[in-house]
Image (cartoon, rainbow, N blue to C red; front, side, top):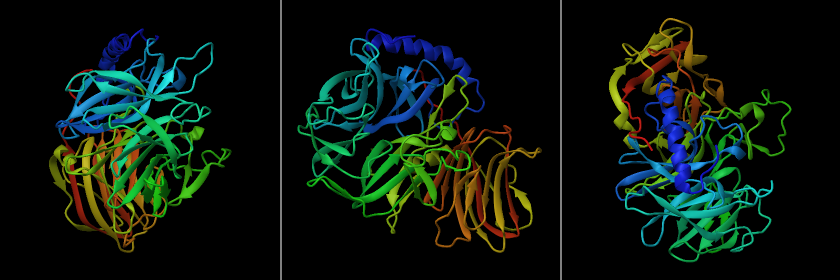
Amino acid sequence: MSIGKTSADTIAFANKSVLGAYPIASQDSARPVCHFTAPAQWMNDICAAIYHDGYYHIFYQFNPFDDQCLNWSKVYACWGHARSRDMIHWEHLPIAIAPSEDTDCLQCVSGSAVCRGDGLPVLFYGHTPIPKDGVKPPRQQRCALPLDSELRTWKTQDVGLIPGQSGIPEDIAGGWTDMFVFHDAGKTFAIFKESNGMVMQATDSMLKQWRVVGRIDGVYGECPNFVKLHDKWVMIRSTYPMTYQVGDFDSDQIRFDMNGLSGVLDYAYGLDLQRDPFGDYSSYHISDGVLVCKYGAPEAYSQSRGFYATNLLTTPDDRVIMFGWVGAFESKGWNGCMSLPRELSLDQTGRLRQRPAKEVQKLQGEQYQLEPCLLENEKRLVPNFAGDTLELLLDMKLTDSSCFSLSICHPQKNMSAVLILYDGTCLNINGTLIPRVYAPDPTRLKLHLFYDKSVLELFVNDGRQVVTRVAYPVSEEMVVELGSQGRAMVDLCLVYSLKRASADGMI
């Protein structure tokens, strides 16, 4: 397979490949039904997200030619596209941008979306040129503009974001990309990965002219996102695991003062020295008691992505919503999905909180409840529930218990899809550890959990900490079991079955 002469040719090849893989993908019983997935084949980064004219739009990095990604340099990455009225029920739209010979493009990689001065949405993406005589030219950043009011078709443009132009260093890193555009004080800026914190500013309202205006600290990893929450700015970084930094941004001096809290955004990777004892840890640091790798996952974690490569949008009622890529599935005609939408905020201590967006409640089906009870060296089931998609709300308190457990498990066999253990300090989620749970009272634990066929999203203590994992089911009729060694008081345990919300249509 090779790219087409034109983008339309490449998209036609892609559609044929996706249609061929769709029957295989649709038969996988472990494929999520409440999380957005591409129609088939491989998806990863959430490249861009934007609200426009009554719809939420997401764009995702898409390999429509395979359900695996074994060698990224040979992936003809496109931008998949979908829209939704509520961020829950999505409609597939045609591929937005694709590589082609006539644009000298091998890959269209991650970026962001923003509305320019006249209100028209613009996509900024990483343009990987086609190698010449075995030599890889450096990446560029380009934009795409819609050709119709429904944003179904797009036209790409060169806007001078090329090494050696617009103040961009000629020797900038070859992997320079992931352009994230943001606004402050009536001005439009952009940051990038692998650029030493370089900041560019648009010099016109149509976002066609840019210049380098300085650099800021705290930009590393991949897919940086930069957003204002209340009166503070938050840098979100796709490290291993993902991290964030709170601070103040001065758009006149081009300075990010990292004077706020920092922490782990999602414990999806939970790096463990014992699993990779001989790795190079020179680029690591400790955050929230967890080892964090700034660039590149160790080999032991290359297939363990749980939550990564995020993007943001702002809703009409001014909520900041984050979407992320969930990966590490078994390839069965598909691989990868998008997280549920998460609303971001800062609490009174300045710590970042993530909560499921209120629209997620639309997924709730039938309700089941375990009445408040005292567990004493015993296990109890949530009555009458059985299934492989669920939402769970739990509020419990350890008394003299040495360990509390929550399991989503086989109804007869000793097998669990999800096993959560809490000892009053450390939370263990299928082997991923939160070394220290943040809570005013460490004996009390609140969990908000979503399980969708093979995806687990867990919000701890009102979103102070979050874990996302791929967790395969052990039955289509799993039960929810609570247990304790010692005594634990369960004050609330509600379970909802989840309604199907798979995306409609094909690309």
